[in-house]
Length: 223
Image 1 (spheres, rainbow, N blue to C red):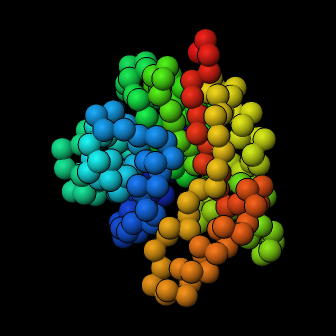
Image 2: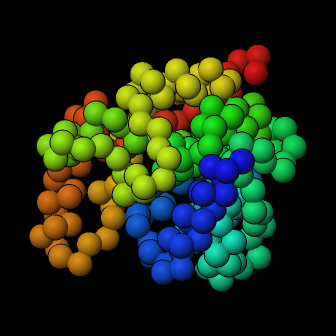
């Protein structure tokens, strides 16, 4: 499990200086179709921003993280929300326990992304939905600068295209119901001009060249 310990070390260092909110997390709750009173699991919950947003709209959120420092931050941001330190490949919950599951920009960094996807399928109710955000290896911005990788590319990172991610998720027992752009254009920036440019670019870039895909998934029939 050397790679898992490396990932824990990486995120421990990353969360020593809290990065702050990076998105409008209500957008993710809308994408996954979350409703009040449902149980939602956020895998790799980080500082707890989505947990906080989920609780505010009446959900029963749970969070999982490998970084103790991130969990401390999440406890302060979303007090009372159940939090567990665990790798995403072996989650300590019973089958079909959650109505909604989110995994936002993390599956690609798992030691075993396929095993992480299988855990999502295992934990999802038959009528539930999961939102899995993963990077697109054909992102036009990377092509323009002749490199590939997210802002966490120092860590082991799986980069696939839409078809590759679809195959991985479906092999894990999930059914891809829809694919959209990750709403990264909601990232706060200090400059209004840069915010407008980011929103303009997000709407202009075709799905096949977008930065990250947002896969809305259901349990595969018979899974």
